[in-house]
Length: 188
Image 1 (cartoon, rainbow, N blue to C red):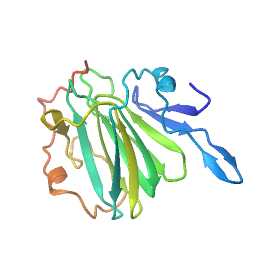
Image 2 (image 1 turned 180 degrees about the horizontal axis):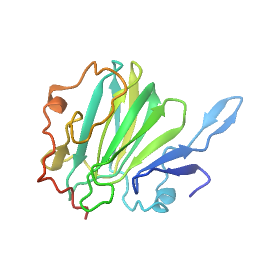
Image 3 (image 1 turned 60 degrees about the horizontal axis):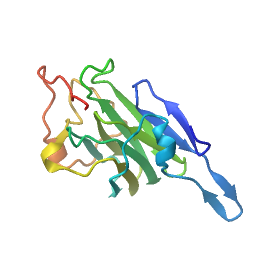
Image 4 (image 1 turned 120 degrees about the horizontal axis):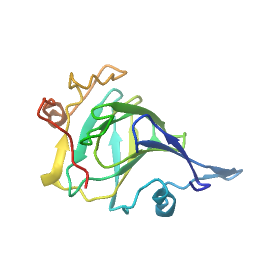
């Protein structure tokens, strides 16, 4: 790994926390958000296709759990640039030894960290403060025909949301629960 990032593995294979090395002086600081060359070393062979910015106003809001099916499955790199979020990724990869397990990273505006979420994971978060802003780096374009989602309150997953849920979109709240027939996403 580069001298610009520290890689912290999680219990779910391929899911990682990227801690940016910060260069500081009296003027302020600098850190690199993304470097394709560095991320090849962790198995990322896709380039960034789009970068999205979100603002979530109210503490306790839940967004997610979203993913895309192949051929538009995507890796995401998520960074919090304002506030604090409880960021969740669920392993949906068919045949994975950690299938349907989830992992949380707390992302904060000043921690200079990103959540590296590979293809085959659903992603969502709960805001821990008001006015949270996130940057999402995606390796594929949004494709409504390949969009998928898991209900954030699925009893099979038992995600432990830390705060009382204050808001969730009607769309996110209406996502189906998983059933026995769901075998996972085949990653190409």
